[in-house]
Length: 361
Ligand SMILES: *Cc1c(COP(=O)(O)O)cnc(C)c1O
Image (cartoon, rainbow, N blue to C red; front, side, top):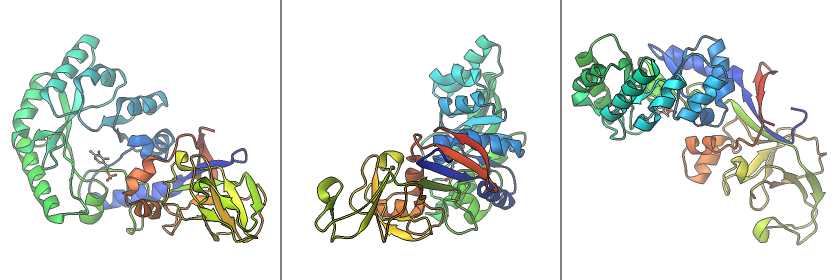
């Protein structure tokens, strides 16, 4: 940490508290969703941390994400969300990833490649209960299951995804009803999972795949944000009357203001135009002056600080320096802002204030 001018800090204690809270709400299993590098938080350290505490199943979106977990030593089940493309069948098998099937083409490719490699084809079946994105139509779930199993694929789980959790509760109930009918038709012997963050938090439920809430990015419910973005200034100086700051000269000094330049910008994931404040070393709120550039951000201070001062650019509090505030100011959802936190920032993982792991840097 001492060696960095800008970095991300992840509080594993808060992450674990969120996991336990979600687990208490679910009547079954909570599968941590680690796609998009765990929504920008860093998938491998989080998977290893959770695996060490007994979590045995994770979900990612791509082969490369699954492979990175395997190469990092993660041994639990890694479910590939989305719908397997036939050309990925061999890679999924080689890396020991559990694909999701929603076409017979993919099921056939998986069975054939497994046969050639001497491996067992295992998969979860995706059922479309109303999102119309991926999945076998729910009315045909039993026929699809039979066809996939007839190819020699071992179907271990069956799942669907909610399209309107937190937005249209009536349609959530429609999807839940359809999924329940699928369960009754397919019978026991499969691991069924439906809920996502909002589904689980608003309605409870059984088995859930949870991303956003695990990272504390749903306000309320007692969840804790887990990530901070910190930076030390690379320059601190006093402005003269009429000095213009940054691209476009958008900020014009009256004279006498103190300015700190922080070495983080939109390439690090700060949404341009949406970051109005940062927190100072004493918790004070300091205004961003002028435009955020690719690698740097300028901040107004009441007085000088030295280059070792640590500013909290992204604070875990949902105030004006929080990720939810950034998303709102940007007119987007917190998911999008989180996944754009850049990989070029090193990350440190803390457990009760003690370094547990670090990545990058
Ligand atoms: C991303 C994803 C999730 C997690 O959703 P959250 O809203 O972040 O909890 C669950 N299931 C599927 C299929 C997903 O793609």
